[in-house]
Amino acid sequence: VTKNSEEGSIFRSQKFTDWPTVKEALIAKEIGGAFILAPMAMQLAADGVPIKVVHLGHRDGTAIVVRSDGGIRDFADLRGKVVAIPSRYANQNILMHRMMKTWGMEFDSMELREVPPPEHPTALREGSIDAYIVGEPFAAKAEVDGFGRVLYHTKDIWEEFISCVLVVHEDLIDGERELVQELVDGIAKSGKWLDEDLDHRMDAAEVAAELYYFQPPELLKYVLSKPVDRVKYTNLAPLEEEFDEIMRLAVEIGVLGEEIAFERYADPSFSRSLDELDWEMDRLPPIPRAAGEEVTR
Amino acid sequence: VKLKILLGSCLWVMLITSLHVQLNVGWTRLASMLAGRQELIVGFLPVT
Image 1 (cartoon, chains in turn orange, cyan):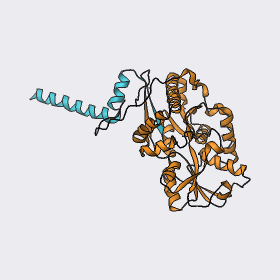
Image 2 (cartoon, chains in turn red, brown; image 1 turned 60 degrees about the vertical axis):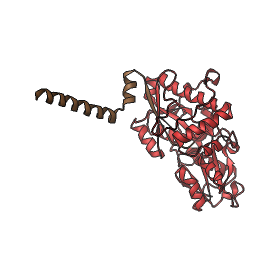
Image 3 (cartoon, chains in turn brown, yellow; image 1 turned 180 degrees about the horizontal axis):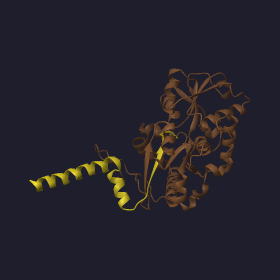
């Protein structure tokens, strides 16, 4: 893992534990960019926060999870149930409403309850909710721990589902385009590398588990391989028609106050063809284990 | 005695300055600033 791009620029990641704090850090310019929820990016732009979506974080990587010993067999069985969502501004919330429309159900036919993502598996195990929809690795957590099963993967109900998007300050887009381009290229290159070989995914799981997610590597390995298209890291350019669908649904269910044009919150000009991007690396070396040693590669 | 006071003051100022740099900027960031390298901090939550 390196913090430097090939051009020498430094990229640091800062971990947050809840969405409102990320939002505040963006507004205060404590951070130049962030991976945030797609409808949240639209809302921030509508509120006048000068940020733009320049890339996606991934595709899919979300699932609706129910108890493995319960009787919920399809979406209709969720009628009258309590389903946890990560945030009102999450695309998972939009997806639940999209599914209700598809299944001919009223929007109030189930209770959608906002619960922080790490608490979803515990809430299901304890029975305070009947199901949850969340991004990985918290969907896989209930499966791996043996008390939950996936009702639907997003890849089966909303193809190429968008959850987190990369937003950056407009100041950077206007004044430091090269820096933003380096960041987007780096994410696109690493995504291509991840999707081209299962061994790459296993290496990445080890690194991400220890340095970023603080979860058992086995859990992330499960997420990245069971099945392998559970979450995808290519095709990450923000596309107007996809965002328009999310935006219109968000307006329909009252998450957004009014429609907002794609150009106001997105700038897809940094996304390049993957043919132009390659990472000259095969496998990742193991993480140094010495106590107190800074992990750099 | 004056020399001791002067040296002591200089050391004290250096110590305080170092602590301020460490706390408010950080040595890594200072080094990259002096080297003219650009830096970008990206926030994330550990969930896809």
